[in-house]
Each structure stands twice: as C-alpha cells, then as structure tokens.
Length: 100
Image (cartoon, rainbow, N blue to C red; front, side, top):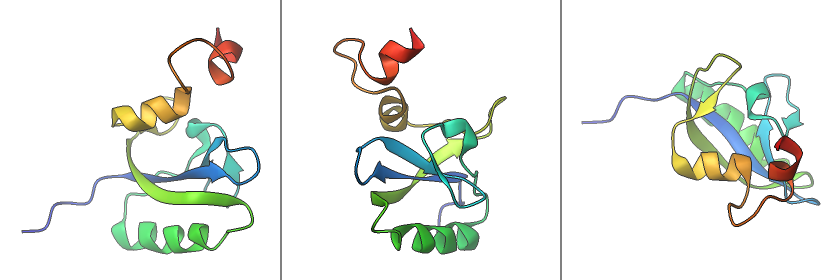
C-alpha cells in the first residue's frame, strides 16, 4: 500500500555560493525557508521538481524535502533539513553568527 503524500518543499544548493536555497511559488531561489513554496499535491510537486532540476546553471542537488506549515511559513520536519537550514553546529559562523 502506498504511503500518503506529505507536504514538501524544494531545496537545493546555490551553484556558486553553495548556500542552501528553497524554491518559492514565484520561481525564485531564496535562502529563507519561510519563503519556500509548500507543495501539498504530489503531481504538482513532481512537476515543480522537474522545473527546478532543469536550472543547472543556478542550483545543484535539487530534491523534495518533507515540511509542515508553520506560523511564518514552511518548517522542516526532519533533523537533516533543520541542520541544513541553520548550518554546521561546531561553532557559530555563517548563518549562525548572523542570527546570534
């Protein structure tokens, strides 16, 4: 029996900078997960993924990640995505230093 589709976001890494980016509803790549498009339909998610994967001059490693609706936009449901969103945990640098 197939599992029910859970909401997703499309994420990747920016080709030149390597930053984690998220696809928005208006086809931009944002570094803010709160701006990501939350996809609740499996067929639509697959179509959006195909379009994102075609942007080889902009991003690499495109994939669908589980997410849930939050007060300020989508939120990750898996620790891997939370880790990618906040960056390495060995010391504050990059995104962590900016938020501190």
